[in-house]
Image: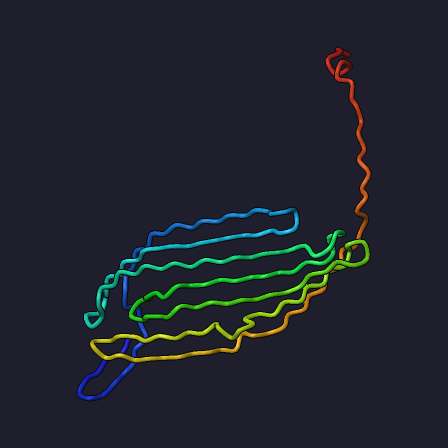
Length: 184
């Protein structure tokens, strides 16, 4: 929390709010045309805050975020896949901080080799350099703007190899329970 006293600005870290939140999460998963798997998730919430420090204001916070995760099969053998991942958080207020929207698009490709024992994933995170914290805070009439960008863009490569026998034989044995009830 920031305070201005006798022309001196000070920033004090402490718990400034009690808050109550109620929300709703929604998720949907489906496959289309036997080649496109998609997952959609949405999260909406309402938060009411009560300040524990007199300089802070009561807040009513509405927030909404959603995401799409898609995997598209590129060949008949199902060994090459295109991944298209996107999430978006609409503008919201948290505590005394008002944030603009945040979003990220991360495409990738996935492939399987050696009878699907080796999986190779290549993912580009935050392709368009859109993941940032941009907004302002209000403290007793004082507005402090901020813009923070940590470069989350990256190239992630993962290799997974499955060892072992995929063809496990099932063994069944029939037991005659008539002998169990026989007295000795």
